[in-house]
Image (cartoon, rainbow, N blue to C red; front, side, top):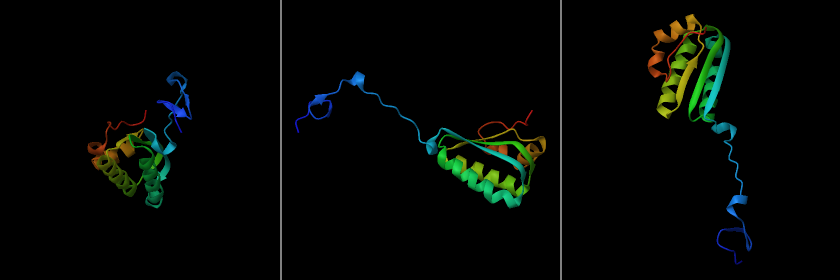
Length: 126
C-alpha cells in the first residue's frame, strides 16, 4: 500500500487543518473529585466513608475535596479515618482538602493534627 507521507488513509493525504481531535478525560481521571459527606459519621459508617474516599483517590489524580458541610456528627473513629486518608493522599501525591466543617468537627480535626496533612487551611463553614 503506497501511502503519501502524512497520509492517514490509503493514498489520499489529509490536510492538518481538517483534522479535529477532541480529548476528554474519562470520569475516573478527573483533576478533582469531591466527596460530599452528610449526617452522623459514626464508626458504623466508617467503612462506607473509606470506600468513597478510595474511589475518589482512584478517579482524581490531582485533588480530592472532602465536603463536611452537611455532617452533623463526626465520631473519633471517622476522624481518624480522615487522618489516614490525608496521609495516604500525601504519599500518593494527591492534594486533599477538607471543606465546610462545623465548628465541632473542626475542633476534632484540629485536635488530631489534621491541618499538618492537608493542602489547604481548615475553616469552619459560614
